[in-house]
Image (cartoon, rainbow, N blue to C red):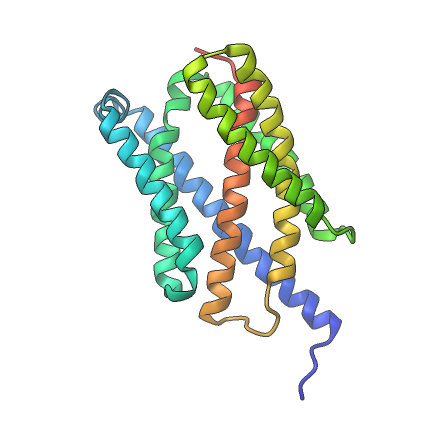
Length: 229
């Protein structure tokens, strides 16, 4: 029976997280490049934001890709999972292009670096802490559900003060979820399957969770600190 030493276990975990963060960063790069390119191309962004059917169609595709990865990851090949993640980040970039039309590029850059600092700090905390974050994570997930429902209500209310409150709550929730998700990914990582399709799919799912945490943290911070055109 081959026993894996603690040093080898930690080394494999570190390599696994390198893959997770490389994929997350790659997805963020694709989304950012797509969003910026779309904002510079009037025919494309006019098609997206002047046609509600087209816009909501893009959102439905994004949801389908996320739920497809979440629920069918075990039956997918590693190549298909990677492709779906890349396609998802591209479609997200299309819908995120609106931020370049609303906010100045300087404030977008400033908020991006603030987000990166907060995300990195909480990711490090989630990775190194010995404290079990499961209980906190469950509370944050319930808070996220409440935030989504309240945001839907505010679509009809159009209350700017309420929107500000929701953004503050969103920052708190996604800051905490970053640490929780990193710890959860670390716990779920199967040691000994490095280099397999299963390992690649684990990395993709981890990257997807952290990508969603980063993007949502960024958007909530942008609503709070972004300078409008």
